[in-house]
Length: 409
Image (tube, rainbow, N blue to C red; front, top):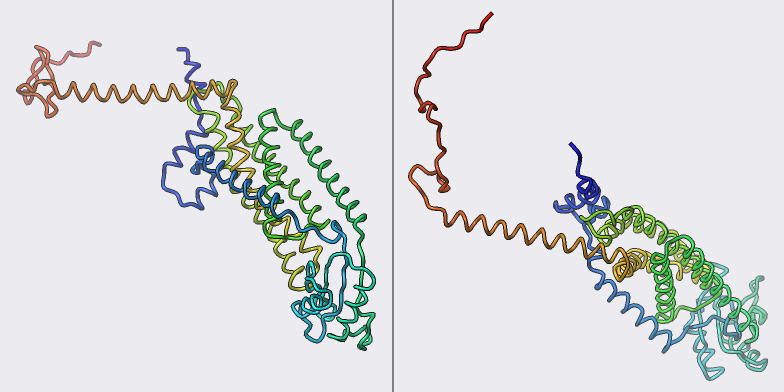
């Protein structure tokens, strides 16, 4: 007997098994760990699109209104540093600076720890008279000591970064960022098919804009280390997208030959199966970054490490969100707009709708037939007619008659 090829093609054991498991009651962590498809990511794409749009709106508005707090390497200016001995605080230094020059410093922070601790002042470019005046005021107020433990004017160091140098650094940083993004887009275009490439590039720009917007909103100082960190987290986002889209490709292979599940449902399963991996990768990635922040800020006071760690921390969290909750729904939306996937999705939904309506009609007809059937004597409890017996059938309880046929030898 020949087998029905359509029934063979309609078998989708993985998603059916996962869907059956998802109907059971599982805890949140169990669903995360097993990846059973219990989280509606693609099905609730409008919610995630709304969150993404809100983040983009806030980021773009902050960049347009507040701009960025550029570090001295980009904007140019003066940097004055003095030892932080004998209980010198940043607020005291800020007051001396404002009283001496008549305006506030751009930034005053404590760097280093222990005997190497120092107060660093960042200001707009100061001429020689202003620099000398500020040095004298700081020396008279705090009497900073040199390495020999003696009060010394030379313990206060000054450095000037010209605007020309800052412009060159800015140009090189932007050039490096543009080149990296272009090379990444080329790789994505080669690595993925067209629709996946569009979704991955969209996720990349989403992560770039939101991370930059958070830097602008909070007022983090943009330094060369921050730019390097931004390039690093863009590479992380690319890696996460490759992992997720590889699983989507694996799950959706041959989906157009099936009529039981849509492309979106298979992609949603892939997102669930990689969700726990993305969470684990993000947690493992940010733990050393948090450690770097602790060491940089509380122990060493190294501003370069702080800037590098901050942008990586923000970017990895945003990247984990974008690769699962933005890139995958965007891919499904693009696929379902036109082409064979759109036609297949309509076909599956139409068949599913017809099957549901057919089962409902059949159930209604059975109920109507049972209600209109007359109840006769001897009928069963459900109103069905009694079973008939043939003319030679014995009555219940009677003894059998006749002789058994003897076996002939």
